[in-house]
Length: 226
Ligand code: DX5
Ligand code: ZN
Figure 1 (tube, rainbow, N blue to C red):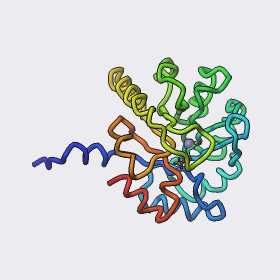
Figure 2 (figure 1 turned 180 degrees about the horizontal axis):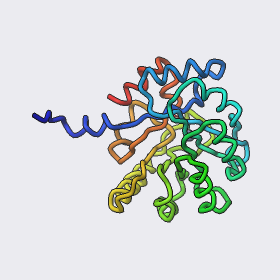
Figure 3 (figure 1 turned 90 degrees about the horizontal axis):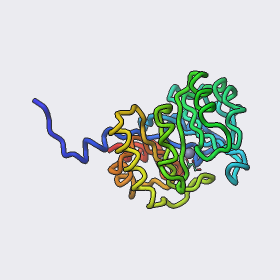
């Protein structure tokens, strides 16, 4: 006999969580990643910043290659860099599984998305809070993930921008209407106090840094999945 669950429980139990190590203890990244595994994280989100596309610098393929041996969880490299096209090969060699690039980069996106696919990675496209979903539409058949930014990229610990909620809904409706195999991920300012609204708007994956790496990492992740 089928067990009936209230709809909200069914929706939330399917949510996938991608901890962004940006707020982790960089002196002990392997431990932080193992804590993510204990909490049943689904991905490890890697925020790569170059100081040009965003006003901050983080890490690149060298660090990713060294933490690759800590886990088998899929690595999603969120590239906030001006010239992602120059580094796809390096990130692939470092062991990433998903490469997410920004709609806002000033290079030919069709060529870039094809290049990522040809290297064998899954393809993600990120849109900033002020980029309308309309601008991502023409690429939706070429990607596996749409990363809707709910903060302006650059830093962990910023406040969630509420006005992206209708955009998450719009993207989800489009994916369902067109029957596309594209997951909607939402990144920035997601806390235990607001994630239900994000999930109810249509997010399949939530990305979070500060809400996960402050306190009990495994519990923070499993609390998102309850
Ligand atoms: C922002 C990054 C986010 C960030 C999220 O540029 O892309 O992934 O680390 O951090 P929180 O969850 O603290 O907003
Ligand atoms: Zn990110």
